[in-house]
Image 1: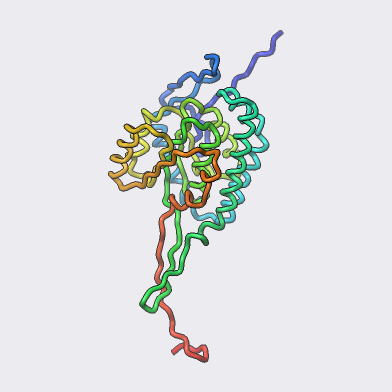
Image 2: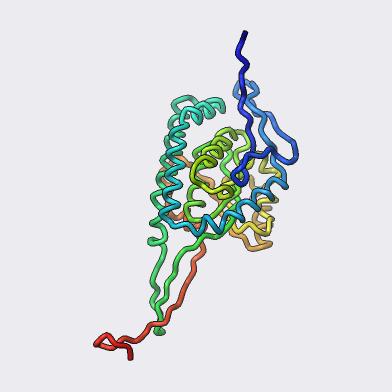
Length: 293
């Protein structure tokens, strides 16, 4: 008797759980030879709203963690990706890469998490400053996380581009809602499984699958989203995103890069999603002997 093949069910990743889309819709993902690979959830506006609520709920806890603790958690994600390397490679091969290309992409993706894990407890020192002022005060400027970040991930990079945009966002204490590549979505769902079984709190990262054509307007117009990262090059979507973002003055960044290059990873991507907080503190006059006067 032939063994029945058990195909993986690809769902969404919201709030640390794996729900199906509330719309009940899906689209067929086919390989290079037009063979059916999987049915992928077609996310709706309601799915995005659920993901944003989860991200907002997780923000306080995640942003208040120590920088070193966030570093440990990002490194743990890298460890767990390394442990599931064969699965990621297989999914990349299914989506059209050669095995050598797939192995290289997985290795680069693991390295990217390690890179930003290393920056978690260093970027604040790099971008903070003690400012000269003319009054009798200390004046400090320090970076603080922006809040909830909506991300429309690269279309042509199934895993590396996805990791490259999520890692700097959460390294800086933000939470996010991510729309994965429409044509190459498999690794996004598996990355969610990695995060769900790591030390990352539910809601810090939320991953949706579906079409940018349907969802980009909701990503950019939602009033409780603080910033948006757009990693594609559709001019019509870029125009509408800019118009919608102005409604609540959310910050918009366009990260359309070659994610295999060294300059596609840098601490300034963390800084993009930071607000600079400046604090004034009065200077107490100290006499020569050390006593106050």
